[in-house]
Length: 130
Ligand code: C2G
Image (tube, rainbow, N blue to C red; front, side):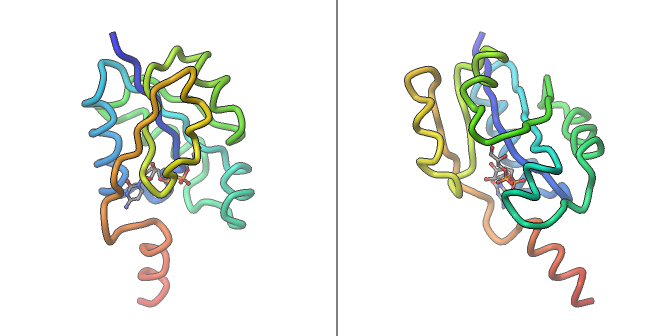
């Protein structure tokens, strides 16, 4: 049984998120998702997510392609999460290309192409303009 892990904030859930989660799930038998905490998101993006972490976690957990969800507290603990959830494969969008190659001795790593023309930031900007 192949266990796949992926990470993300998944704020203002959109089709790009669906695409990466479904593609990640199709690469194995069991999909585990680390949802970034509000604090981690703030440290990465200097703003709070629109949806709070408990809601983002519940949205991800409600998806058919997702088997297990946890809150990701820091980017540096990738290896600890990979070991804790016994992941065989780490999948990330290619905006993170090369960034997690350091876990490779312990876990296969694959970067998938991002869905073009959609992002949480863009949705927020469009909504603000209207
Ligand atoms: N994504 C995508 N296509 C888009 C937008 C996002 O494939 N148009 C992917 C990203 O590449 C990422 C996942 O969806 O793999 C989640 O994206 P974000 O919510 O932006 O996650 P991020 O804040 O980059 O957090 O430990 C890693 C981080 O927690 C990733």
